[in-house]
Length: 87
Image 1 (cartoon, one colour):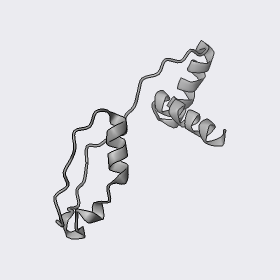
Image 2 (tube, one colour):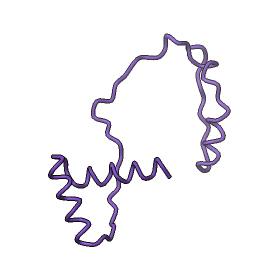
Image 3 (spheres, rainbow, N blue to C red):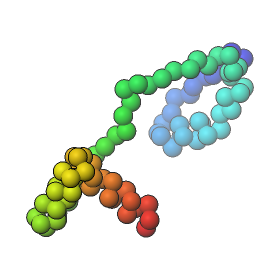
Image 4 (cartoon, rainbow, N blue to C red):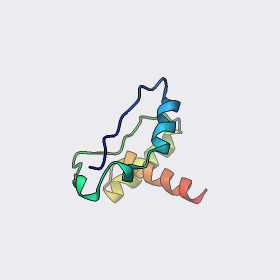
């Protein structure tokens, strides 16, 4: 470690964000100061969403998911992801 990093008291998130944008970590740390870590239980965050769709469409989605042997919500996410990627 080269020198101690002193953290000021921040009044708000914008002030803190500005501080971290200007910090050059090479002034404070050597490459040997870092250790490799893993986060085995880290999962992407998800948020529940309500969506209205016709019953026939949901039934066809469930049939297709059953045929592909995947959960229907997973299949729905895949379809949405493909649509967003091509948009």
